Amino acid sequence: MISWRTLLVVFNLFFVAVGDEHTHTYKDLEEVVLWMNTVGPYHNRQETYSYFSLPFCVGPKEKISHYHETLGEALQGVELEFSGLDIDFKTDVAKTVYCEVELDEVRLKTFVYAVKNHYWYQMYIDDLPIWGIVGEIDEANDAYYIWTHKKFDLGYNSNQIVDVNLTSESRQKLELGAKIKFTYEVNWKKSGVKFEDRFDKYLDPNFFQHRIHWFSIFNSFMMVIFLVGLVSMILMRTLRKDYARYSKDEEMDDMERDLGDEYGWKQVHGDVFRPPSHPMLFSALVGSGYQMLTVTFLVILLAIVGELYTERGSMVSIAIFIYAATSPVNGYFGGSLYARMGGKVWIRQMMMSAFMLPALVCGTAFFINFIAIYYHASRAIAFTIMLAVICICTFVILPLTLVGTVLGRNLAGQPNYPCRINAVPRPIPEKKWFMEPLVIIPLGGILPFGSIFIEIFRMYGFFQTSFYFGYMALFSVTLGIMCGTIGYVGTSKFVRKIYSTVKID
Image (cartoon, rainbow, N blue to C red; front, side):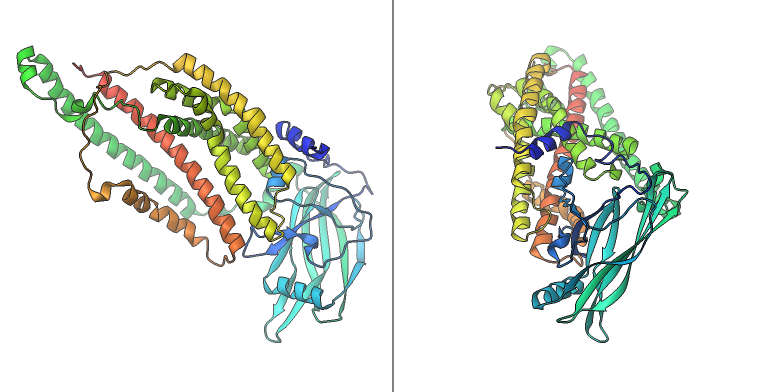
């Protein structure tokens, strides 16, 4: 039986609000919640665990129940737990002991391992992220220390929190039998930062102030323009020559034309519009590419306009919502293309279009999720969240894809080729060995893989490697589908244009 929290997750996926469960406004002395999120090694950012997986202790205040507001939070591994610290709006707290931990052998080894691997943790106050380091190593004395005091400097503007800073102080040596007292301190200060600008400090405003960045962007842009112009000029020059020759041929009488042979790209006019060997898979890829292009454009537009980075998991939630809502785009273009290529099994093609990309993403994510479960990481996705994703694919994406497929077959499913297709295919000449796909694919991917492979430096462990290569593979496949669709649409329009302007007997 599906719990009410799962239903709430699915409901909020389609009605993502701008705010969180808080209104971001406080009255004097009103409670401010400090949420503890995750902890993990600094050099392996994906390897995160629950904050209290380390033997930290909870403050004396009663716990507050919390659940994931959006599907994006759950998929990103956000595991918020109440810290137990008593923090009230505009109320300073002097240095106060909130709990004590006695180091037995197990706790000592756990803390030492965390310090040795440079563990850091993340917290949230009013949706503002805070980061802190667990401890430090004294290599000279071969000793390990843990920071025991958390000093919070909170800035407020009117009745809203606009700034949060954490300072870790009071280090204590980790040794067997030591009693570690954890303390905290809260200082409130009035700030001139506006609420809508409070996330600016997490961005990099100085990035575009350096001329080298502008020069790099301008250089890349001009290089693309130059290459496009060069290729276009070569194509136009070649086409003009071909058009001139074909216009002379049209002036010949029928006897002279019959004695001559066709040459150039006019020679393959009877095969250029022949359907591919796997029309169902091809049309599903093209339809998925159209959909991903639409999703990418809308998400980027909303990110620019709506500042989605200010809300936890909002980017993922919006992307999933838009992907589900734009399923008719996939069905329309994929279904119409399959019909124009003479496809008959349109229901199977519709099913492939609807589930091909979600199955690839979910299959990879579930495989990585098993690794996260084995490592007891916070990145592990609950079964109810998996069930919610499956329900979205079954009850939202599939029906909308069906609607798009029916519309595509009825409105744009008739073949409209500018010339006829020969019944017997022409023999294809053998290609050189360096033109085979098994050679072109690795050569074309060397440079992109090189840039990706560089990011593995200071990265270690099977967990991090699996996450990195798994999600990079998904990104590469999705980007390949989008670029392939752009290439197909561009070349298709180009080929149709040149053959529609030449008389074909």
